[in-house]
Amino acid sequence: MAVIGAGIAGLATAARLAVAGHPVTVFEAGATFGGKMHQFALPGGYRFDAGPSLFTLPQLVDDIFRLAQREPADYFRYERLDPITRYFFADGTQLTAWAEATKFATEVEEKLGTPAAAVTQFLARAGRAYDATAGTFLHKSLHKAGTYFSPETLKAVAALPQLGLLGTMHQRHEKAFGNDPRLVQLFDRYATYNGSDPYQAPATLSMIPHLEHGIGAFYPEGGIYAIAESLNRLATEFGVKFRYNEAVEEIIVADGRVTGLRTAQDVYDFGRVVSNMDVVPTYRRLLPREPAPERTLSQPRSSSALIFYWGISREFPELDLHNIFFSADYQRELKSIFQQKTVADDVTVYVNITSKKTPTDAPPGHENWFVMVNVPHDQGQDWPALTQQTRAAVLRKLSQALGTDIRPLIATEKIWTPPGIAADTSSFGGALYGSSSNNALAAFLRHPNFSGRLEGLYFCGGSVHPGGGIPLCLLSAKIVSSLINEG
Ligand SMILES: Cc1cc2nc3c(=O)[nH]c(=O)nc-3n(C[C@H](O)[C@H](O)[C@H](O)COP(=O)(O)OP(=O)(O)OC[C@H]3O[C@@H](n4cnc5c(N)ncnc54)[C@H](O)[C@@H]3O)c2cc1C
Image (tube, rainbow, N blue to C red):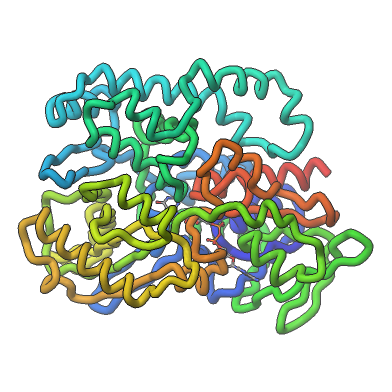
């Protein structure tokens, strides 16, 4: 069988299927594997992870090695982060998000004045909501009748109102921490973990912080790329063939079923094809004559990002691996992204510095800064102008918060924009996480992991069920391989 694309979901799917005994060929348009999870170097000795930087649920990677009866640590190692994130608020307040919930809650009480109990109760509730719902909404296909008739699903649906998960995420946070807008902003930010808007996204997403404070945030030894590297190694050991620089141009179908693939180089026979390409271009470009599920494909996209990769010629001991510099008016910033489809003049800036954990990622005395701003997906905006405006705003914010002019410290630079992300990974509009979760039904409106019309066609990756981000991409691979293995 064939997999189109060697993103994290394509790698995990290929590895799982090969371990189950299927012969698998992966076609990758690019020169190597990883997709959004690729790495690159900049002159002067800096290494960067290009895309994802925050890693949760590492057991989903371990599971694949265990399935193969291999020791996970022989392929892939990681450490639990503590602290997780350093926050810098616009009013000058600084806060450290410690991993352990009670220590974090104490820090909140000391720095922001909100009673620690409000935070511990909120996180405990998030944990209960996650435990009640994840098994149904994330680990299974939502498009198979069997999922709905299980007692587990009925339990999950019944739990939602009791868990206070009706309304929007922002409403939920206002209810919990209404007298502290900074804490509301901190928890609202978790909507951006899947490219959504807390003012529209359902309160069910308020369970995301549980992943960090209940289960843990992790750093893979050597950086995020190590995840892709370890799965590529396992897949290769189990006989998966990787054909790089070979973009699939057509999925060939006859009599309602998949019969093969066409690339610029050749035509291949395959009875089963898994597309790890974004679902929109899969239909538009690879299946142009087949009826497409228009309602599904027209769901609003998640946000994209502007990323500045900077080699910085100094060290900043006050910074950690994950650092957030908040805007003064989050509602205005998010309205710019999701309603006005532009970038506000005051933005929240995320700075990820892997050289804090992997010193060889930058020369001694230097740091590798991955500086990211959430922006709308590409709809033809003037990106050169927005990039210039945002770069200036980011430099102003960071220089002010850190009390040092950052501009002269930038030794080398690369920039990734929404059109660049779209061109490099075929993601529709450069959206980071496929469709957004900006309405209560979004989970049900994502494309299923299989085609209801074409036998032998399957889908994995961030643009289909259960959604974007590393853990959900890994779960899409698990669902697809179960669908194939169970016939
Ligand atoms: C800047 C950025 C920051 C992010 N931050 C985080 C984070 O902190 N934590 C997190 O969990 N997630 C994060 N994400 C999201 C995460 O990276 C993605 O959800 C995930 O990597 C998507 O993987 P995927 O398997 O769906 O496909 P992709 O990574 O999009 O890979 C798809 C692959 O398919 C190939 N392809 C496409 N079309 C064809 C074709 N026709 N023929 C052959 N090959 C083709 C592409 O070249 C690509 O290699 C971030 C993403 C970005 C870009």
